[in-house]
Image 1: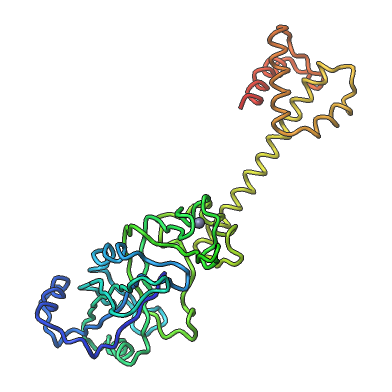
Image 2: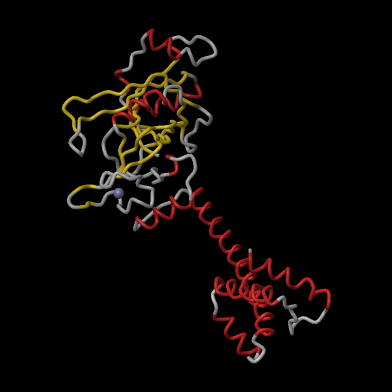
Length: 328
Ligand SMILES: [Zn+2]
């Protein structure tokens, strides 16, 4: 989530043109008296506290994507299910201001409205008085490019950490090619600058892969994950544990089968010694050795007579079963 600012509403005087835009979204034609209009800065091209920034091209793409999107109020606030809607968006250059990288400063300014109603009175007061002054905005971008190497910062090919310097060059991510813009939400005045802002990269992609998360963990000394990502990570670990258990069981059964072959073919060696050897083999070696015994038997056209297996029916089954096992 990125944060934006709500501008002092004194400047907003709703025009007829604006009313026409607003009324595109309303069920009936609303009059100027019925709406509360305010301006907000959704994002800009400066490096933010996550060491990321939008390119100016991205701001122009977002200008189109944010129109019509709704703003929701923090669930701590009294009025639930009340929404504001963006009816106009435009990129503006701010004269005389430059970004941390020394480029001309651009920002994406939006105008939004909320119907004036009794249930919205508190919200309007909060907006007017500056109690609500920030918004969190989320959007999906195709890629976040590393300022140092030019690769996607979430890819394995980028080894840089955002916020760190490399030969005097600051590493930050440039968010390019916005794909979608989501709802925005109003944030009550944070106690400190970063309060209420959860570091997350999930909003930028449709689906975060485990590779993304692991690559972030490798790069960052500290990383906070969204609850959803934590859940994802835990599920992933649980699945790995289950797979590992199955893997161990599979390995044990392969070892047993190999031991049967070995005790037939290496009948001069005691089962205890063979067992000791098999225990030390890797799964790959067990598989290769097992396959080599099968091959040997096929060449010699031998019938397997495992010492550990006496029943006739299982003797017949044995070979093809084992063959399957080692050739999986
Ligand atoms: Zn890089």
